[in-house]
Length: 467
Image (cartoon, rainbow, N blue to C red; front, top):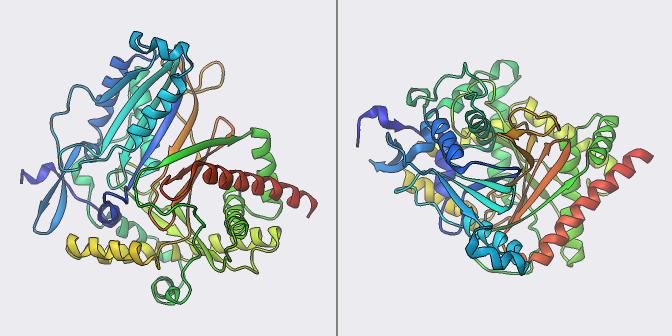
């Protein structure tokens, strides 16, 4: 073990993600930027190197001592951080003429996103730039979840864009993310500082934990029908979007019943899962959806860590019969859970587990997934409004002289779910990406589920207009 200054401790959520990670349960995610225009790979590589100096957690490798894991910071970075693949190179010219460039592009993305991390030998972060055609690129960032959450990944991308555009990080006053900033209990300290505004804080936390880990034994969440039964950890994804006009209609309809766009997306997800199961002859009773909630954004915005808790509202068959009534109930439930502190109950639980040895922690994590009792039906993540860099003359974010025209994300998928969904608003469009395991869902079934979800969202708009 090196000097203590080179060690980046992990908080309880970092250790939770690490304990679940395995050959099949791959706890990492990917962010894809779609770029039109010319990008200089050499300059972009240097921009990543400059940004990484401010984020030690992203330049660590995993070490173990006394039954615990530590992130050991690497002082020296490889010269080539960026991997560059040019599908328009001369050796691929025939494929372009033959119309095979799209297939090569899809294969390239699939191989990259399914390449496993070796955390003991490599950084928990890698990046790929793919040149698909002249002035058409895709930038893929793959990040292990134990090192950085998605919200901080977007801030990191903004820093990279800032360095590429020769203006440094977006926030020049932001201090370097030094090892001293990290403590195992940093998240817990932030939560405890909020308890003054929550009445009966600890009783509510304990009640939520009791409900989650005791009462839920009697009624585990309904699972989503899947047409395959493989055990591979490989994933695929589908990316779609809704127009600014549709988004404005969703927003207006939600506000009419004192709800939010996120509430509507969640309510639509409940009904979609029930419809999906009905189509395949499966009865849905309790459906519970895991919804990440950012609880540390303002308190410690410079710390690269997973500062998330989870809201997991459940609905019954009776709740899901009426669209408008369901939306109102989902809105009330989500707001109440966040307001009364129950959103942080999982944090207390994971903090307690993190005090155990990592081997025991990993066994508990494995039991949760194997028994499928404490895992929700589905994961629905919202990245909110995504802002990347400065907008150019056309109103699109720029990276050098090029434009970032779209963004997509692949979220982790654990065995009980088989699929997960991430949403975000970029350039006025409501972007959505469904990540699924081909070993459990055929591409046709995954596409059908996604279509059903999009239609349910549109049906919600119509129902709210006539309510």
